[in-house]
Length: 275
Image (cartoon, rainbow, N blue to C red; front, side, top):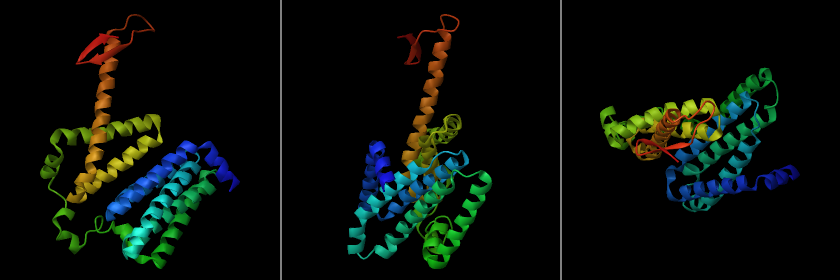
């Protein structure tokens, strides 16, 4: 407990943002029963980032701290509604179990993260497989939901009869977003991946996970087009940022005034102008 209090005193801003994200999750739970879509994206990111931290020998305590706060507050806000509506077993318990599994995985990484790879990697795989089979034995319904993606990863006959749960033809899919936006989005994935390889920041990894999962789900079912729109918007903005930096760099090179030094220029309306 003292270590947690000490960590909080040194990370008050991170704590506030974690609680705000939890409040956002709780608000989503109270307005949309499909909130698990966002929760799964968060947990996928958390697992991917923790594995990257494990392989690069970076600490993972901050991920465990903010994820626990966020999930706890979100599910605390949603508990009253789902319990009172009699939906606790169908729309609440499986999602709580997913959150607990995600946090348990983070705790495991925290415990073994400082050990050599020859110990951490096999141990992580062994414990994860053991946990998988334990959950499969105790909660087969929950595990089937996770594996099948509630019918989106492994198609069922029921889902084949629902139009919005079926994928759109490629041409119709592209037209639903716009040809230019689709091209910018696809090229934006390449640019963000390139930026991540260079900078290796958490925010770029989150953008990658969020965008890839959102776009993949929109290919799987037409109903997820609306949730993929922000991903295409973010990726399109990233592509515009890349183009702007390229043009700005060209301006600086063309207006170089000496060896080892140059004036600062900015790009305006397609022209290089001195500031």
